[in-house]
Image (cartoon, rainbow, N blue to C red; front, side, top):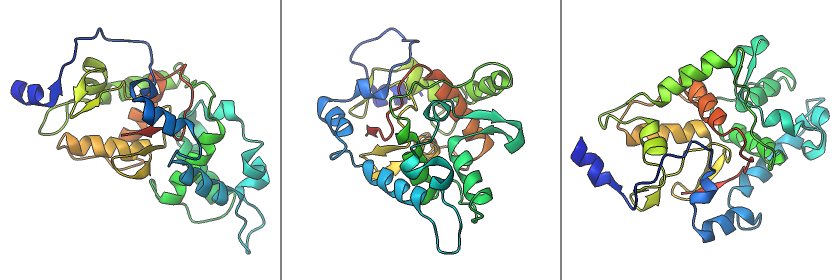
Length: 252
């Protein structure tokens, strides 16, 4: 195991562990930052445009669209509330992600068949809704009903998985700032999700990214939308309290 880790990590320096949240944007090179900052160059904007189209869409046999409640192009969305997700909602199953909230409205308010977690249209809608809150400060509740759930998420985050016997915290806490296969490891913050991943050439939800990480651990992934992934999402988002929403971020 020691030799395997030595082969994976090329240590440029031994940085002190930074407990303050730092966006993955700070770990990018200048050209990738410029790509993210320019809406014409940011490839994730394709998903934003698709999400906007779905948000405003009113089908012939329907009397409402997302825009009916939230205004055309989401002008009436509460962006501060968007920045608080995941939230605890006892009326909709307890721990609730933004993607689940959108899907709930999709089914209940629009009377459509719900989309499966990770469906391209659902990710596009999530991308658009989060994009409307770009620049808002992540502000996930950490007290009350959320406290024990965050602890469960932290436990999963620190659990070793797979044949490589690694946890999320190995990359994003212990080795943040070091190099892995030519890339600098960030803190793994989620303030830019859904984000466009250059290596995959697609917009990617947080749960999809977690699955990619589990595969790299040579571990059996959880299902997108599973309670395990939701708990990890909650913990990761709470770690990023104070960061600005960057959706759609651009990452490798």
